[in-house]
Image 1: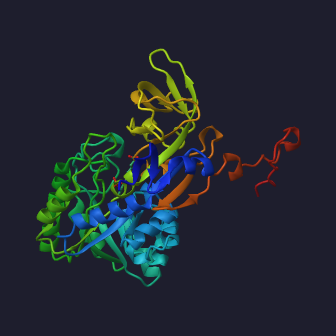
Image 2: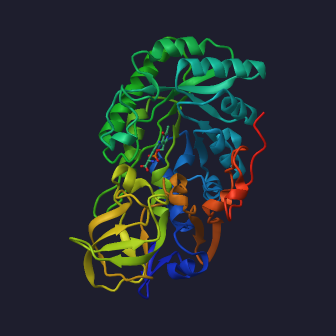
Image 3: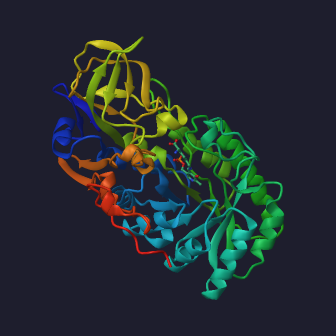
Length: 434
Ligand code: LLP
């Protein structure tokens, strides 16, 4: 059974009709299918069946909801984190510390210390100074920090420019040309257990050729490091595999990826690590929304929905396509622009899109929204953060409450203001900042 499918003319998540969720939880809301999440997690494991030693760390940034992380931990996944906040999310979710890998360009002293204290499994070092700091923090704690050096292979992943990370001009990793010298120096530090290399060239990669080219470069570096006497036991191949956002367009061929990895790395004799994010969670989620108005337009009518760019930023940020599907389709097709209520023209989910005809009050979804959806939401326009709902067969639960912007309650009047003048305000003046 497909996780999101029509039954008696109504779109369901597993066994639950989406209109039931909309009526009880409200919209906009992200709805995730546990069935789909488990299936994707298992499919990736199965694709790597021929890889003898491996660790898979879900890229928490794609979706840090603890309920989903917990489910993935039960599927044998660790977490790939990029901040102190994601460290807390992964640990709270029940991911074992030793299954956590810390990637990311700007780790602070406090974040490194917290991760060391938690006893995480590996640090992927992005620059030499970070490695030196990590080594000194480890020595202070009488530890040796397990680490790899992330290299920048200077390979174009052939994906969207904003999510390309492996070109020489990008901020990620150390240049492959300098990697040996930096590795020699970091490996000599007693606070580090430098044990390998990491690479990640971008996201939403469908073409396996650039990935293979990057891995070949890693293989060359591996041989060069070993011939200099380094003991290399781990290689982190990153994430980046793309999914199909538009029906009819292919995602990455996961089984071909597994076969390519096995072929390229056959003689490496290391533990391979993977950091998939989107691949695991994108298709397991939809953004459920209700049509507010239909407004005539110059060329096509505007379908104004109650979700907006603050809930799902990908179309506004990357011109990303998300399939739009009506919860109770009429079968009458029409062409419309699908937009949110935010005051920007960029608040557009689709332009001149062929859809089933809808009217105010109807429900619809934006598909493939499980990755980089809820996590990138904001309260722009003082809008609420969307609710998140998990469905598992016939069970359903809210796994993140909708939070009204006013409920976040972090703003204060400056002490020299007179809040009493602001009629109806709930804010109080802060005592002066000492
Ligand atoms: N590992 C590292 C070091 C990363 O930087 C990323 C993603 C991943 C793993 C996971 O990549 P994935 O398997 O999900 O492609 N907000 C963008 C995507 C940003 C990806 C950033 N790094 C989007 O919505 O398309």
